[in-house]
Amino acid sequence: MRLNELSDNDGATHRKKRIGRGIGSGKGKTGGRGVKGQKSRSGVTVGGFEGGQMPIYMRLPKRGFNAPNSKTYQELSIANLNRAIESGKIDGKTDLDAAALVEAGVIRRAKDGVRLIGTGKVSKAVKLHVSGATKGAIAAVEAAKGSVTVLDEDTVYRKKGEKQDRSGKVSKADKKAAKADAAPAEKAPKAEKPKAVKKAPAKKAAAKKDDGVSAYLEPTQQFDADADNAVVTKIEKYLGASLKNKDAKYVSCSDETELDTIVKGFMKKKMGIDDKDTAMEKVKAVCAEMKPMRMKNRVTFYYLLAKNEGKLGEF
Image (cartoon, one colour):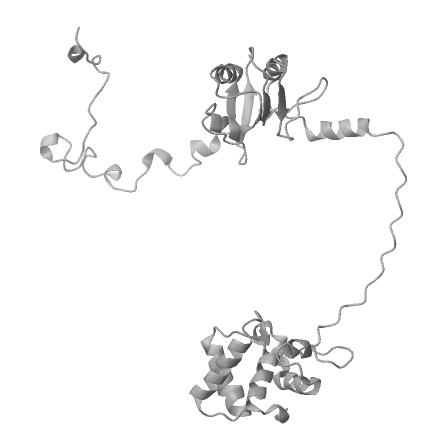
């Protein structure tokens, strides 16, 4: 017997049927579909149609449940753990979690966590931090004077007399009952809650403060320390209802359309500058002046435009 004499058993393999490869192949033209009829057309699923009645796959009852948020754990057996200890991949000097086990080459990937399984003996004490562990695996590690810390707090092992669902976790009803049994019989009297004080209805944000000082005076004084409250208030009245709109309350220097609107409106009608290019240069100069301020409020912006033109007196 030689290597070149080895072959599969008769019928173990067969060549793939290649259809639509010419008349010489035996499956050309119609490709095995035959002629005419419903099945010779495309887009036909005769196997799932039953003449109009409810299909069998819809009549049959469904059983089981696939959890959408289920977790997949990487299993680590005691035998593989002991083999890694003896080969020197891991030692008992440091705590071992999923990342450390992957780095040491004990497991290929951590997935959603590591579960310690199996029984046997461990030759050296190790400290493991895993997402789950069987009782036999914990006993094997602790027998070698090691420790196993289970990180998954949702996993609660069943005690005697407790019900357990299919996932291996104690039901919520049993957890509540256990907490009620552990709680002391006498409960401390509940402290009386202080009566809620009714708050006055919030007033609409006004541009002026109660003392008659405009809310825009302080931002304007950051650029002109001698800014007059009366002038700022007049500019505020000039802008009127536009300040109630959040988008119109601030000037966007990166929006050429908005700057063009200021040139055609405020600069031409109020400041009397007809030359569009000159007016645009003055508007961009104020943009550069207010660059440190991220949100450029329109009142301060128009104040600086009027100040640069020396026309604050018109307000």
